[in-house]
Length: 72
Image (cartoon, helix red, strand yellow):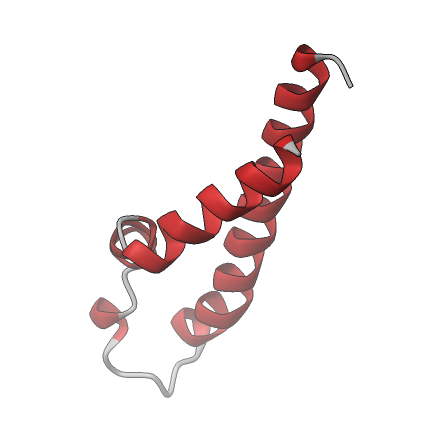
């Protein structure tokens, strides 16, 4: 496989992973933010959660793993 295609494939794989991650987070947090029975909505800060998660070691290792696998 040409080197250029490897990079394209890796980027597409990563973007799909990130999209799935964001959709999963949205599906689990957004309904809570819209639930009138949930009082602590300020604790459900989606932006802050995603920021902290994306800076976590496990997320970074997963991204690296996906990138490495898709480059092979």
